[in-house]
Image (cartoon, one colour):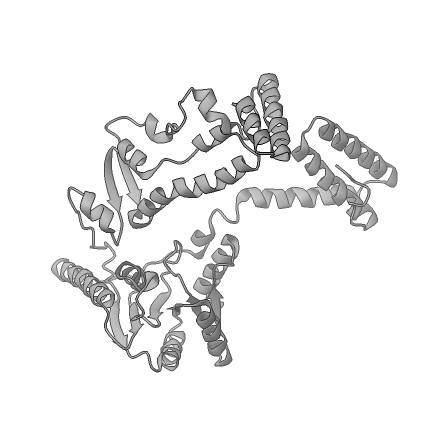
Length: 409
Protein backbone atom coordinates (compact mmCIF):
# COMPACT_ATOMS: atom_id res chain seq x y z
CA UNK A 1 0.00 0.00 0.00
CA UNK A 2 2.88 2.38 0.83
CA UNK A 3 4.46 1.86 -2.62
CA UNK A 4 1.14 2.55 -4.38
CA UNK A 5 0.44 5.65 -2.30
CA UNK A 6 3.95 7.05 -2.83
CA UNK A 7 3.50 6.62 -6.58
CA UNK A 8 0.21 8.56 -6.39
CA UNK A 9 1.71 11.41 -4.34
CA UNK A 10 4.78 11.75 -6.57
CA UNK A 11 2.47 11.75 -9.60
CA UNK A 12 0.56 14.68 -8.06
CA UNK A 13 3.91 16.42 -7.38
CA UNK A 14 3.34 16.17 -3.61
CA UNK A 15 6.97 15.39 -2.83
CA UNK A 16 6.99 16.67 0.76
CA UNK A 17 3.89 14.60 1.57
CA UNK A 18 5.48 11.53 -0.05
CA UNK A 19 8.68 11.93 1.98
CA UNK A 20 6.71 12.45 5.20
CA UNK A 21 4.56 9.37 4.62
CA UNK A 22 7.49 7.11 3.70
CA UNK A 23 9.54 8.24 6.69
CA UNK A 24 6.68 7.76 9.13
CA UNK A 25 5.46 4.42 7.75
CA UNK A 26 8.94 2.88 7.55
CA UNK A 27 9.67 3.99 11.13
CA UNK A 28 6.38 2.39 12.27
CA UNK A 29 7.22 -0.83 10.39
CA UNK A 30 10.63 -0.95 12.06
CA UNK A 31 9.07 -0.39 15.49
CA UNK A 32 6.54 -3.17 14.81
CA UNK A 33 9.25 -5.61 13.77
CA UNK A 34 11.58 -4.72 16.66
CA UNK A 35 9.22 -4.20 19.62
CA UNK A 36 5.87 -5.42 18.30
CA UNK A 37 4.19 -2.06 18.76
CA UNK A 38 4.25 1.48 17.42
CA UNK A 39 2.52 4.76 18.18
CA UNK A 40 -0.83 4.90 16.35
CA UNK A 41 -0.86 1.15 15.68
CA UNK A 42 -4.66 1.31 15.43
CA UNK A 43 -4.27 3.08 12.07
CA UNK A 44 -2.95 -0.18 10.60
CA UNK A 45 -5.98 -2.16 11.82
CA UNK A 46 -7.10 -3.17 8.33
CA UNK A 47 -3.77 -4.85 7.54
CA UNK A 48 -3.37 -6.43 10.98
CA UNK A 49 -6.90 -7.89 11.02
CA UNK A 50 -6.94 -8.90 7.35
CA UNK A 51 -10.12 -6.94 6.65
CA UNK A 52 -11.14 -5.74 3.18
CA UNK A 53 -11.11 -2.02 2.27
CA UNK A 54 -14.30 -0.35 3.53
CA UNK A 55 -15.20 -3.14 5.98
CA UNK A 56 -16.48 -1.95 9.37
CA UNK A 57 -13.87 -2.34 12.14
CA UNK A 58 -14.25 -4.76 15.04
CA UNK A 59 -15.84 -3.14 18.09
CA UNK A 60 -16.89 -4.26 21.56
CA UNK A 61 -20.39 -5.02 20.23
CA UNK A 62 -18.90 -7.87 18.15
CA UNK A 63 -17.87 -9.63 21.37
CA UNK A 64 -21.31 -9.43 23.01
CA UNK A 65 -23.46 -12.59 23.03
CA UNK A 66 -26.53 -12.66 20.78
CA UNK A 67 -28.92 -12.48 23.74
CA UNK A 68 -27.15 -9.47 25.32
CA UNK A 69 -29.22 -6.51 26.52
CA UNK A 70 -28.11 -3.03 25.42
CA UNK A 71 -29.14 0.15 27.25
CA UNK A 72 -28.75 3.39 25.28
CA UNK A 73 -28.80 6.07 27.97
CA UNK A 74 -30.00 9.57 27.01
CA UNK A 75 -30.94 8.01 23.67
CA UNK A 76 -32.37 11.26 22.26
CA UNK A 77 -28.76 12.53 22.18
CA UNK A 78 -26.90 9.26 21.69
CA UNK A 79 -28.65 8.24 18.44
CA UNK A 80 -27.66 11.56 16.87
CA UNK A 81 -24.08 11.09 18.06
CA UNK A 82 -23.93 7.56 16.63
CA UNK A 83 -25.18 8.94 13.32
CA UNK A 84 -22.65 11.78 13.23
CA UNK A 85 -19.45 10.07 14.42
CA UNK A 86 -18.50 8.50 11.08
CA UNK A 87 -18.57 11.74 9.08
CA UNK A 88 -16.65 13.69 11.73
CA UNK A 89 -13.92 11.06 11.91
CA UNK A 90 -13.76 10.73 8.10
CA UNK A 91 -13.34 14.48 7.62
CA UNK A 92 -10.41 14.63 10.07
CA UNK A 93 -8.63 11.53 8.75
CA UNK A 94 -9.03 12.56 5.09
CA UNK A 95 -6.92 15.64 5.86
CA UNK A 96 -4.23 13.45 7.47
CA UNK A 97 -4.17 11.18 4.41
CA UNK A 98 -4.03 14.09 1.95
CA UNK A 99 -1.01 15.63 3.69
CA UNK A 100 0.95 12.40 3.97
CA UNK A 101 0.56 11.80 7.71
CA UNK A 102 -1.30 8.51 7.23
CA UNK A 103 -1.89 5.78 4.64
CA UNK A 104 -5.39 5.67 3.09
CA UNK A 105 -6.08 2.43 5.02
CA UNK A 106 -6.18 4.58 8.20
CA UNK A 107 -9.66 5.66 7.04
CA UNK A 108 -10.87 2.14 7.89
CA UNK A 109 -9.95 2.66 11.55
CA UNK A 110 -13.21 4.48 12.20
CA UNK A 111 -16.43 4.54 14.22
CA UNK A 112 -19.38 2.49 12.96
CA UNK A 113 -22.00 4.10 10.75
CA UNK A 114 -25.50 4.18 12.28
CA UNK A 115 -26.76 1.42 9.96
CA UNK A 116 -23.73 -0.75 10.91
CA UNK A 117 -24.44 -0.16 14.60
CA UNK A 118 -28.10 -1.07 14.05
CA UNK A 119 -27.05 -4.48 12.65
CA UNK A 120 -25.09 -5.09 15.88
CA UNK A 121 -27.95 -4.05 18.16
CA UNK A 122 -29.25 -6.87 20.34
CA UNK A 123 -32.25 -6.37 22.61
CA UNK A 124 -32.24 -2.62 23.18
CA UNK A 125 -33.72 -0.38 25.85
CA UNK A 126 -33.76 3.31 24.93
CA UNK A 127 -33.58 5.38 28.13
CA UNK A 128 -34.66 9.02 27.86
CA UNK A 129 -36.89 11.59 29.55
CA UNK A 130 -37.63 13.03 26.10
CA UNK A 131 -37.50 10.28 23.43
CA UNK A 132 -36.95 11.47 19.86
CA UNK A 133 -38.70 10.27 16.69
CA UNK A 134 -36.14 7.47 16.13
CA UNK A 135 -36.97 5.78 19.44
CA UNK A 136 -40.71 6.23 18.95
CA UNK A 137 -40.66 4.61 15.49
CA UNK A 138 -38.29 1.76 16.42
CA UNK A 139 -39.61 0.85 19.89
CA UNK A 140 -41.85 -2.20 20.11
CA UNK A 141 -43.09 -1.09 23.51
CA UNK A 142 -42.97 2.09 25.60
CA UNK A 143 -42.59 1.79 29.38
CA UNK A 144 -43.08 4.98 31.41
CA UNK A 145 -41.20 5.40 34.67
CA UNK A 146 -42.61 8.71 35.83
CA UNK A 147 -43.16 8.06 39.54
CA UNK A 148 -40.31 9.08 41.84
CA UNK A 149 -39.86 7.17 45.13
CA UNK A 150 -39.13 10.49 46.90
CA UNK A 151 -42.60 11.75 45.94
CA UNK A 152 -41.12 14.86 44.33
CA UNK A 153 -43.43 16.29 41.68
CA UNK A 154 -42.46 18.02 38.43
CA UNK A 155 -42.16 21.79 38.82
CA UNK A 156 -45.09 24.15 38.39
CA UNK A 157 -44.89 25.91 35.05
CA UNK A 158 -45.98 29.52 34.63
CA UNK A 159 -45.96 31.65 31.47
CA UNK A 160 -45.35 35.39 31.85
CA UNK A 161 -45.03 38.22 29.29
CA UNK A 162 -41.51 38.74 27.92
CA UNK A 163 -41.87 42.54 27.87
CA UNK A 164 -40.42 43.12 31.35
CA UNK A 165 -38.75 39.72 31.75
CA UNK A 166 -35.45 41.00 33.19
CA UNK A 167 -37.07 43.10 35.94
CA UNK A 168 -39.52 40.32 36.72
CA UNK A 169 -36.80 37.69 37.02
CA UNK A 170 -34.85 40.03 39.34
CA UNK A 171 -37.84 40.13 41.72
CA UNK A 172 -38.12 36.33 41.62
CA UNK A 173 -34.38 35.99 42.34
CA UNK A 174 -34.69 38.14 45.46
CA UNK A 175 -37.51 35.93 46.77
CA UNK A 176 -35.37 32.80 46.23
CA UNK A 177 -32.23 34.36 47.75
CA UNK A 178 -34.18 35.16 50.95
CA UNK A 179 -35.13 31.48 51.13
CA UNK A 180 -31.47 30.45 50.53
CA UNK A 181 -32.42 28.74 47.26
CA UNK A 182 -30.70 28.91 43.87
CA UNK A 183 -31.83 30.05 40.42
CA UNK A 184 -30.95 28.95 36.87
CA UNK A 185 -31.61 31.37 33.99
CA UNK A 186 -31.31 30.37 30.35
CA UNK A 187 -30.97 32.90 27.53
CA UNK A 188 -30.74 32.49 23.76
CA UNK A 189 -27.49 34.33 22.97
CA UNK A 190 -24.06 34.76 24.51
CA UNK A 191 -24.39 38.54 24.37
CA UNK A 192 -27.70 38.51 26.22
CA UNK A 193 -26.27 36.17 28.87
CA UNK A 194 -23.33 38.54 29.42
CA UNK A 195 -25.55 41.63 29.59
CA UNK A 196 -27.98 39.93 31.99
CA UNK A 197 -25.09 38.82 34.22
CA UNK A 198 -23.75 42.40 34.34
CA UNK A 199 -27.22 43.81 35.08
CA UNK A 200 -27.93 41.36 37.91
CA UNK A 201 -24.46 41.92 39.36
CA UNK A 202 -25.00 45.72 39.30
CA UNK A 203 -28.22 45.13 41.25
CA UNK A 204 -26.45 43.29 44.06
CA UNK A 205 -27.13 39.72 42.93
CA UNK A 206 -24.35 37.15 43.34
CA UNK A 207 -24.32 35.74 39.82
CA UNK A 208 -22.05 33.70 37.52
CA UNK A 209 -22.19 33.02 33.79
CA UNK A 210 -21.65 29.54 32.34
CA UNK A 211 -20.45 29.55 28.73
CA UNK A 212 -18.82 27.20 26.20
CA UNK A 213 -15.27 28.56 26.72
CA UNK A 214 -15.16 27.28 30.31
CA UNK A 215 -13.30 23.96 30.61
CA UNK A 216 -14.70 20.90 32.38
CA UNK A 217 -12.88 21.35 35.70
CA UNK A 218 -13.83 25.02 36.02
CA UNK A 219 -17.40 24.17 35.06
CA UNK A 220 -17.59 21.59 37.87
CA UNK A 221 -16.16 24.16 40.31
CA UNK A 222 -18.80 26.72 39.26
CA UNK A 223 -21.61 24.19 39.82
CA UNK A 224 -20.12 23.26 43.20
CA UNK A 225 -19.95 26.94 44.22
CA UNK A 226 -23.59 27.38 43.20
CA UNK A 227 -24.59 24.49 45.46
CA UNK A 228 -22.47 25.81 48.33
CA UNK A 229 -24.09 29.25 48.04
CA UNK A 230 -20.94 31.14 46.99
CA UNK A 231 -23.32 32.70 44.46
CA UNK A 232 -27.09 32.36 43.99
CA UNK A 233 -27.80 32.65 40.26
CA UNK A 234 -26.31 30.84 37.27
CA UNK A 235 -26.92 32.28 33.81
CA UNK A 236 -26.32 30.07 30.76
CA UNK A 237 -27.33 29.42 27.18
CA UNK A 238 -27.41 25.63 27.02
CA UNK A 239 -28.35 24.22 30.43
CA UNK A 240 -29.19 20.80 28.96
CA UNK A 241 -25.76 19.35 29.60
CA UNK A 242 -25.11 16.66 32.19
CA UNK A 243 -24.32 17.52 35.80
CA UNK A 244 -26.77 20.38 36.21
CA UNK A 245 -29.32 18.40 38.25
CA UNK A 246 -28.93 20.47 41.41
CA UNK A 247 -31.25 19.89 44.41
CA UNK A 248 -30.75 23.48 45.64
CA UNK A 249 -32.23 25.00 42.45
CA UNK A 250 -35.87 25.94 43.04
CA UNK A 251 -36.43 28.24 40.05
CA UNK A 252 -35.65 27.87 36.36
CA UNK A 253 -36.31 31.00 34.29
CA UNK A 254 -36.45 30.56 30.50
CA UNK A 255 -36.15 33.91 28.73
CA UNK A 256 -37.61 34.34 25.23
CA UNK A 257 -39.31 30.95 25.44
CA UNK A 258 -41.40 31.74 22.34
CA UNK A 259 -38.39 31.98 19.99
CA UNK A 260 -38.56 28.66 18.13
CA UNK A 261 -35.28 26.78 17.66
CA UNK A 262 -33.09 24.01 19.08
CA UNK A 263 -32.94 25.46 22.62
CA UNK A 264 -36.69 26.23 22.64
CA UNK A 265 -37.95 23.00 21.07
CA UNK A 266 -40.40 20.76 22.92
CA UNK A 267 -37.68 18.35 24.11
CA UNK A 268 -35.29 21.13 25.15
CA UNK A 269 -38.01 22.94 27.10
CA UNK A 270 -39.03 19.74 28.94
CA UNK A 271 -35.38 19.04 29.82
CA UNK A 272 -34.76 22.65 30.96
CA UNK A 273 -37.97 22.78 33.03
CA UNK A 274 -36.86 19.50 34.64
CA UNK A 275 -33.78 21.22 36.10
CA UNK A 276 -36.06 22.42 38.93
CA UNK A 277 -37.59 18.97 39.51
CA UNK A 278 -35.25 17.97 42.34
CA UNK A 279 -36.38 20.74 44.67
CA UNK A 280 -39.52 20.35 46.76
CA UNK A 281 -40.73 23.84 45.76
CA UNK A 282 -39.48 23.71 42.17
CA UNK A 283 -40.94 26.17 39.68
CA UNK A 284 -40.29 27.09 36.04
CA UNK A 285 -41.20 30.46 34.53
CA UNK A 286 -41.37 30.77 30.74
CA UNK A 287 -41.18 34.35 29.50
CA UNK A 288 -43.07 34.64 26.20
CA UNK A 289 -45.41 36.98 24.33
CA UNK A 290 -47.11 34.14 22.47
CA UNK A 291 -47.74 30.45 23.03
CA UNK A 292 -45.79 28.30 20.56
CA UNK A 293 -46.59 24.65 19.74
CA UNK A 294 -43.36 23.60 21.48
CA UNK A 295 -44.39 25.48 24.64
CA UNK A 296 -47.90 23.96 24.60
CA UNK A 297 -46.53 20.43 24.24
CA UNK A 298 -43.78 20.92 26.85
CA UNK A 299 -46.17 22.44 29.41
CA UNK A 300 -48.80 19.76 28.67
CA UNK A 301 -46.29 16.94 29.13
CA UNK A 302 -44.90 18.44 32.36
CA UNK A 303 -48.44 18.87 33.75
CA UNK A 304 -49.31 15.27 32.78
CA UNK A 305 -46.26 13.93 34.61
CA UNK A 306 -46.95 16.17 37.59
CA UNK A 307 -50.56 14.93 37.82
CA UNK A 308 -49.41 11.28 37.77
CA UNK A 309 -46.98 11.86 40.66
CA UNK A 310 -49.58 13.79 42.70
CA UNK A 311 -52.10 10.97 42.16
CA UNK A 312 -49.51 8.36 43.23
CA UNK A 313 -48.60 10.40 46.33
CA UNK A 314 -52.27 10.78 47.35
CA UNK A 315 -53.00 7.09 46.78
CA UNK A 316 -50.06 5.89 48.88
CA UNK A 317 -49.96 8.71 51.46
CA UNK A 318 -46.50 9.88 50.37
CA UNK A 319 -45.23 13.27 51.52
CA UNK A 320 -42.67 14.63 49.02
CA UNK A 321 -39.12 14.79 50.40
CA UNK A 322 -36.32 16.96 49.02
CA UNK A 323 -33.19 15.30 47.66
CA UNK A 324 -30.10 15.55 49.84
CA UNK A 325 -26.89 15.19 47.90
CA UNK A 326 -23.47 15.87 49.37
CA UNK A 327 -21.61 18.59 47.50
CA UNK A 328 -18.46 16.48 47.16
CA UNK A 329 -20.41 13.98 45.02
CA UNK A 330 -20.46 16.56 42.26
CA UNK A 331 -16.68 16.75 41.96
CA UNK A 332 -15.77 13.09 42.44
CA UNK A 333 -13.23 12.13 39.82
CA UNK A 334 -12.01 15.68 39.26
CA UNK A 335 -10.03 15.95 42.48
CA UNK A 336 -8.67 12.40 42.57
CA UNK A 337 -6.68 10.61 45.25
CA UNK A 338 -3.89 10.30 42.70
CA UNK A 339 -3.57 14.09 42.49
CA UNK A 340 -3.46 14.27 46.30
CA UNK A 341 -0.72 11.63 46.46
CA UNK A 342 1.32 13.44 43.82
CA UNK A 343 1.08 16.70 45.78
CA UNK A 344 2.19 14.86 48.91
CA UNK A 345 5.16 13.33 47.06
CA UNK A 346 6.17 16.79 45.80
CA UNK A 347 6.17 18.10 49.37
CA UNK A 348 8.34 15.17 50.53
CA UNK A 349 10.76 15.75 47.63
CA UNK A 350 10.92 19.47 48.49
CA UNK A 351 11.80 18.68 52.11
CA UNK A 352 14.46 16.16 50.96
CA UNK A 353 16.14 18.77 48.72
CA UNK A 354 16.19 21.33 51.53
CA UNK A 355 18.16 18.86 53.68
CA UNK A 356 20.75 18.17 50.94
CA UNK A 357 24.24 19.70 50.94
CA UNK A 358 25.55 21.65 47.92
CA UNK A 359 27.75 18.70 46.93
CA UNK A 360 24.77 16.29 47.07
CA UNK A 361 22.66 18.69 44.97
CA UNK A 362 25.41 18.90 42.33
CA UNK A 363 25.62 15.08 42.24
CA UNK A 364 21.84 14.77 41.90
CA UNK A 365 21.77 17.32 39.05
CA UNK A 366 24.50 15.38 37.20
CA UNK A 367 22.64 12.09 37.74
CA UNK A 368 19.36 13.52 36.41
CA UNK A 369 21.07 15.13 33.39
CA UNK A 370 22.68 11.80 32.52
CA UNK A 371 19.37 9.95 32.95
CA UNK A 372 17.53 12.51 30.82
CA UNK A 373 20.01 12.23 27.94
CA UNK A 374 19.87 8.44 28.15
CA UNK A 375 16.06 8.50 27.80
CA UNK A 376 16.38 10.92 24.86
CA UNK A 377 18.90 8.65 23.08
CA UNK A 378 16.48 5.73 23.51
CA UNK A 379 13.66 7.85 22.02
CA UNK A 380 11.82 7.69 25.37
CA UNK A 381 10.78 11.31 25.12
CA UNK A 382 8.02 11.20 27.75
CA UNK A 383 10.43 9.82 30.33
CA UNK A 384 13.05 12.38 29.27
CA UNK A 385 10.52 15.20 29.68
CA UNK A 386 9.57 13.91 33.14
CA UNK A 387 13.23 13.87 34.25
CA UNK A 388 13.70 17.34 32.68
CA UNK A 389 10.88 18.65 34.89
CA UNK A 390 12.45 17.02 37.97
CA UNK A 391 15.73 18.70 37.04
CA UNK A 392 14.01 22.07 36.62
CA UNK A 393 12.34 21.74 40.04
CA UNK A 394 15.64 20.79 41.65
CA UNK A 395 17.45 23.80 40.11
CA UNK A 396 14.58 26.14 41.05
CA UNK A 397 14.55 25.00 44.69
CA UNK A 398 18.33 24.88 45.06
CA UNK A 399 19.28 28.06 43.21
CA UNK A 400 16.00 29.99 42.92
CA UNK A 401 16.13 30.01 39.07
CA UNK A 402 13.63 28.77 36.53
CA UNK A 403 15.88 25.80 35.86
CA UNK A 404 15.11 25.28 32.16
CA UNK A 405 17.91 27.43 30.70
CA UNK A 406 20.54 24.75 30.12
CA UNK A 407 18.26 21.79 29.62
CA UNK A 408 17.58 20.72 26.05
CA UNK A 409 15.90 17.44 25.06
